[in-house]
Amino acid sequence: MPGIYLHIPFCRQACHYCNFHFSTSLKYKEEMVEAMLMELELRKDYLVDRELDSIYFGGGTPSLLTEGELMRFFEKIGKYFTIRPDAEITLEANPDDLTREKIAALRRTPVNRLSIGVQSFFEEDLRFFNRAHNAREARACLEQALVAGFDNLTIDLIYGSPTTSHAHWEENLKTTFQYGIPHVSCYALTVEERTALAHFIKAGKVKPVDEEHAARQFEMLVTAMQAEGYVQYEISNFARPGHFAVHNSSYWKGEPYLGIGPSAHSYNGESRQWNVANNAKYLRALKDVKDAENLASTLFGIEYLTPADRYNEYVMTGLRTIWGVSLERLREMGPGYEAHFLQHIQPFLANGQAKQEGETIRLTDAGRFLADGIAASVFADNA
Ligand code: SF4
Image (tube, rainbow, N blue to C red; front, side):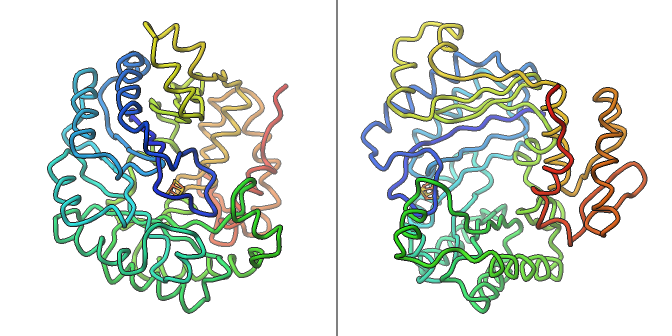
């Protein structure tokens, strides 16, 4: 079932590790909302099936939207699409925005799941990451969200930072369990090009990220999550049964989605589109636009997927998730894909990093941390 992603491209301050698209100037927030509403209207025919299973406000920082702005999105979506009664409606939120009043306002909207960017419960980490919130706010927002009735919560945590000792990482996980958070996304601190973190490391101002330190914390993570009954359904995502993320799972299962806003991506089964990752250009493209065709030339790039692209995407996500790679699905993709996959996955089956159960091949605990490298080994070239 399809979903809609809305990218809110504003943040209060730039986290040192982040390479997402956002602006720290909120000056054009209202104009941006108008432009995104316009894009929604113009692209209402993108999804063939208009019954939505999920809506996801990501960013950037969607918790900067007011209740009124959020409701305008819901009105517009409701006009052109059917939101299923049990649809998952997620809003990414930063702890510094989640005051008691804000949480109460969010409860009045159709949002039924909060994805909170906690990252760590320790001050030292939060300062190193240049997060806008502190450790007290990280805890307070969870307490208040739970009291207000937001029990469908997910939080993001970062491991592998030079500031995060193994003891602190263990403590971060324990705190997560104490709050009973049903879904957790955990990411290794990654040094992306053109970020403040990359610059500081190059200048010798901070220690580089140590891969062994991160690998050890990943092992601690997997062990702790298993002991607490969470399922690692994707390499970075852990959920209690019944709490797998609908929206993200649909990406991994190849379902269509419409992405609205600067830098948002869309997928309809045949092609991928990506909106311009620049707020000013995005606003200009939407300003005088009359119809969807006119929009295509200024707003987004497009790539039609070849059979090899489809195969590569499928094995990449399959190996990262609990669903694995189905040999039957490979056979449906065309001649040669199953044989190619079986030939190249063989060394990983032999060394215990992958295992076969019937028609499905999955990575084992030993292989999961190496998922991207293993996927690269089984990729096919475009002929
Ligand atoms: S709040 Fe999120 S999107 Fe914004 S800079 Fe920080 S990590 Fe990036």
